[in-house]
Length: 484
Image (cartoon, rainbow, N blue to C red):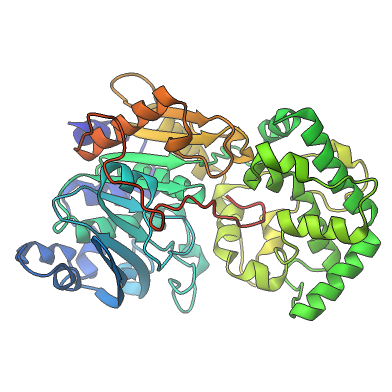
């Protein structure tokens, strides 16, 4: 019933770029399904076969390695994808995925960070809550899941959603129970975009700390957030350090130059060391609230008036990472900055406490992508997704952190019993916010809904799988820059 309802709703707003996606879900073969080997061939495989054999019987699937983990089988795999899902005959590439296999009788969670995939066994929170299998996907164009040569025009949210759709189609005959999509930050955005274009695939979506930059040039919500987040004395202390770093630009830049020379860092992409220096310093306030535990971090901010140059340099390093805007620091994240500058948008905050000390202001994503890669921004992409979520979201959950700047512009799904969608905010949490950090009644409700969507239940309203200190370690992905 849920899938049928969502399909009818989505017909109202599907745009041209999604119409190819819609055809896939009607049962009619798209170009991608005609020209790329049919993954439905797995349906004849006996369920008595070893799970590795069943996975490798999928056309286009190959094994990189299997790693042991008690109670699971963990596979690192390559899956052949079309470079262009609209024209699949024009080349393919290998996309890395991992499968944390528990049992085909359990529900499955489809996870992506929106970046690279980890090849170490791990379990995302919804996977623990439903005690299920987990499929994790590396986002297209993040190395090594990049076509060669790379046609950057084929890096967009529809193409990536279509990658997920084909993986789901390939694995559904093996993992036949309910499926949930999840991800944090850019991964939470990815789960949302997948749902927008393929609303019949998943039985629910759990999106963590996902920003929703609907109008790229209108960022006042971020300014308002930074004006009021946390204790005033904490805000003032981190702003003072940021300002002092710019006042001491000359001696700190010399330290950065020496650091870059020692490490072999260069600044060709951003243009100059000075631009890289300022980009790191301007990220300081945002990065502090994004990653630092405010309850303890406020007391560790150095006194700007008395701190030495080295103390300020070291503190900025601990929060922002001086290598972030070097060529070497940017290289792995070119796909993110490309998407930020073509579809996703990127925040820009005014920071009036800096006065005229800033020479460049918040620099646009274009500054962080090699100039040989062309970029054109498409303002309609995020507006379309936002409109769809507001009107058509069904069984979608968003979890945000109270102190996380990325939550200043958030998704607001359609409300009401028929939509069964929710937005929760974890008090005191930052960019690592989770269901486990919600207040007691919201945590119980969120857990119950996630389990219901997965087709399982717990009388106690608690995760079905016991906590595993290795699989379930809740480390925040600390990128040290202004990236979701």
